[in-house]
Amino acid sequence: MAFLEVNQVKKSFGQGDTRVEVLRGIDLTVEKGKLCVLLGPSGSGKSTLLNIIGGIDGPDSGSVAIAKEKIEDMNEKKLSLYRRKHLGYVFQQYNLIANLTVKENIEVGAYLSDAPLDVDELLHVLGLWDHKDKLPNQISGGQQQRTAIGRAIVKNPDVLLCDEPTGALDYKTSKEILELIEQVNSKYQNTIIIVTHNDAIKHMADQVVSLRDGQIRSQVYNDHKIPAMQLEW
Ligand SMILES: Nc1ncnc2c1ncn2[C@@H]1O[C@H](COP(=O)(O)OP(=O)(O)OP(=O)(O)O)[C@@H](O)[C@H]1O
Image 1 (spheres, rainbow, N blue to C red):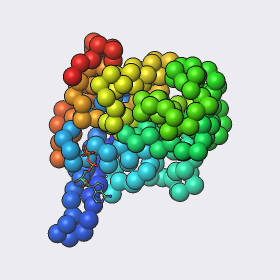
Image 2: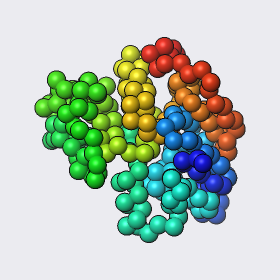
Image 3: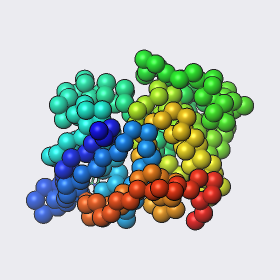
Image 4: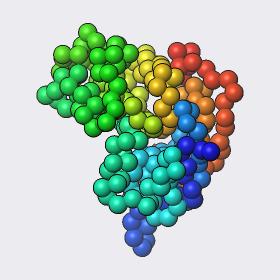
C-alpha cells in the first residue's frame, strides 16, 4: 500500500474574475523510502502541491494521507503534531536562525521530535563537524543548506519535502547537496519529494512527476537511477 497518497486534490486562489485554478485534480502515490522529483514550468502548481502535502496549506477538495493518516480529518492541534511527526522541510532560502550556531540550529529540529537522531553523528554525515560552532553568516551557502537539511532530518521525518533545494547554489555546490539528499535517503529511508526546475535532477529519482497547468502531465519510474555525482546540466 502506498505510503503517501494524494487523491483528487484541487486548489484555487482568488475570487470571481481573479480566481485561478492552480491544482485541478491531482492523484499521486509515493512508496516509502522513494525519492520523487516534481517537475513543471513556473506556475504549474508544484509548490502549492508540496505545501498541501506538507499540511502548510489545505486543499479545496480531495485528500492527502501519510501512512493512512488523512490530513483533512485533523484539527489544528492534530495537524501540528502530524507536521512534527511526519515531515521535514527544506527550502531554497535556508531560514536558519542567525544568532544560533550550526549545531544549535540543528538542535532546534531535534527539540521538536520524540526520537531525534544523534546530533553529533548527523553533523559528521552532513560534513559540518568542523563548522558546528559557527554562526550561519560565517559559513558558505552550501554549508547553510547542509545545516537546513540537518535541521529537517534530525527528527528523522518519514517524509522530507524539498522546494528548490539547490535554487540558490552554484553548480558544484548543488551537486554536493543532491549527493547529500541521496545519502540521507539511503541511510534513513525517508520518502523524499524534491520540487525543481532543474530537469537533470530527474535522473537521480525513483519517480518523476511532471505537472502542467495544475495537472499531472506524465509520470515515469526510473529503473536505472543515476547517482547525483554523475548528473550534468
Ligand atoms: N497564496 C496564493 N495566493 C494567490 N495565488 C497563489 C498563491 N500561491 C500560489 N498562487 C498562484 O498559483 C500558481 C501556482 O503557483 P506555484 O507556486 O504552486 O507554482 P510553481 O509550479 O511552484 O511555480 P514556480 O516554479 O515558479 O515556483 C501561480 O499562478 C501563483 O501565482
